[in-house]
Length: 303
Image (cartoon, rainbow, N blue to C red):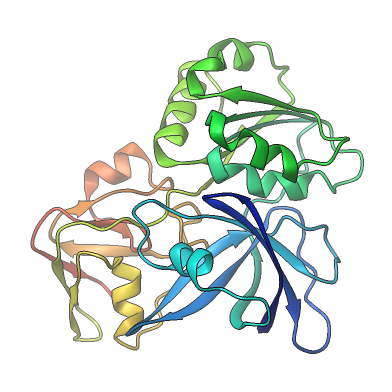
């Protein structure tokens, strides 16, 4: 889709609120929890970044919130430094991998940092029974409060340590589902606490905003296609495959959905996802190419 930047609102030095409108026609309806992928053309490459839609399902525009990542690989920095009202951007149609689970009688929502964004769309679900706790830095509090409607029931905590997560989880009834979103360290902490408290995996739902990070360059050999591709220090494995003209499967680009999972035939992956189990990671026979890299200088994948 071609969407035009209709509004840009600065919420803080590092957080901006963007409104995307259709160049023509109407937008596909995006339910609560949906995201879009923006294709941002930069010098010599195209960044593809996923952002949660915070506007109501059926709204005439898509609204997203973007934090300028300190060690940005390009996309968020471009949106903060170069995006202007009237700019037309290629946007992939919305996908929804984080819809509120229908079997839950109550939703315990737990977010940190920019992980607040998918839950903003949950507020548009009629009659949703939820308890929401958000952890953030003190300097971001005003920006996040500006995103919350007056009717929202959210407890804001200054930092993860201000929330007694073990006690919160222990106080929930059996028909409560836990939904998580935030940076990798926060997600690992929350998942480990829930597992220690005995929460079953089918009642825990997560979406990662960790995204891909850079690292040591490596080479990937694709057994079936015969390609050999060098993955740069500032590239994800998925980015490198796409830059080579390939179209591997992907949806969330954040290591949570499992769509981009590929078999590993040789080499050792460096796992950074939130999808594979501890047993699957230890086996080292699969990799989530959107966020994970290589511990060895070469990987051989079945693709």
